[in-house]
Image (cartoon, rainbow, N blue to C red; front, top):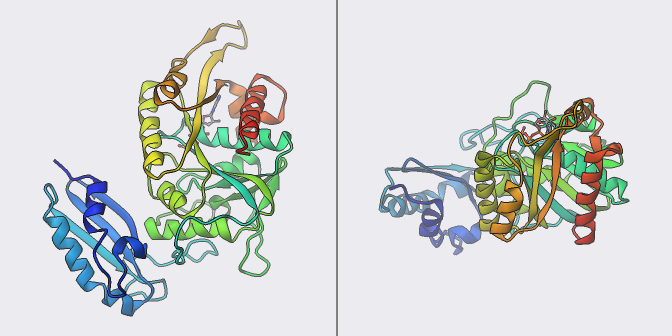
Length: 359
Ligand SMILES: Nc1ncnc2c1ncn2[C@@H]1O[C@H](COP(=O)(O)OP(=O)(O)OP(=O)(O)O)[C@@H](O)[C@H]1O
């Protein structure tokens, strides 16, 4: 049986470094993964000398981990900041965004931002980005000062959904000016990449990019910053919850069994990261035929509410499946800007967050 990530992490947490701190205290462990008995991770240190001094730590970590049942190999890469090609695992892309993270002791506030809400999903394509853009617009319509950060590194869709384009300005080469659309302050990793460019960064680079998007963007005074996460339970989620003072997470799912199963994994991950799950949203809940008015439940109905009940989490609401939702998203004008049934559903969702003091 393969060893779990938690057990493996616990095993090496107290290894002593040359400066007297333990491995867990030093916060240099990145991109830890366990797959088919192979453990891989990155140790990120300040410079080449520090990297050399890690040799005994690497050896001790290997020794302890290989002694665990089910571990067949341990692969450790020690990196120092970019600019030292012999040690760097990946060269920093030629972007203002995308660098190794700077040292930080624990979760940090984003100056001027009162609440940070991460929007996640277990499965891709369940409408997480659509829900995020519409919720942002609904909150702005309710008079809140709202920011939207598209951290969906593998498929940033907020520029299209919010109708923004063009590279954000950085007059001083340090701070980045976000864009504005529909009353929302918007920033997307997609706006910093060249068209068609794929992101191939792993743990430390992702963490660095996320840190920059949170700390180097001039967000201004915000009641709430919504963060559109990639689907699943990967490095971005982990980095975000470790590095930013996240108020809580909202999980989007369709009522389908497979999506719910994955949603439960996402909830479990946030629980492990000690990020409160603020509630669940059921998207693509019901479909009303615009011609005959017949209501159908293409992906089932009520599954998310039932899951929320079983997990003792708030059920925040359901959003119907409607063609106009997709058309509005594709046109850069979220449906919540209008007055229909879906817009009302988003206004209710926004109201719950405002009443709950979360936005
Ligand atoms: N309630 C809805 N009614 C109709 N279409 C919807 C609805 N919600 C989302 N969609 C459409 O479904 C598609 C997937 O939505 P979206 O990109 O928001 O999903 P996602 O979960 O963010 O996906 P991923 O992160 O995997 O890229 C989009 O074309 C979107 O317009």
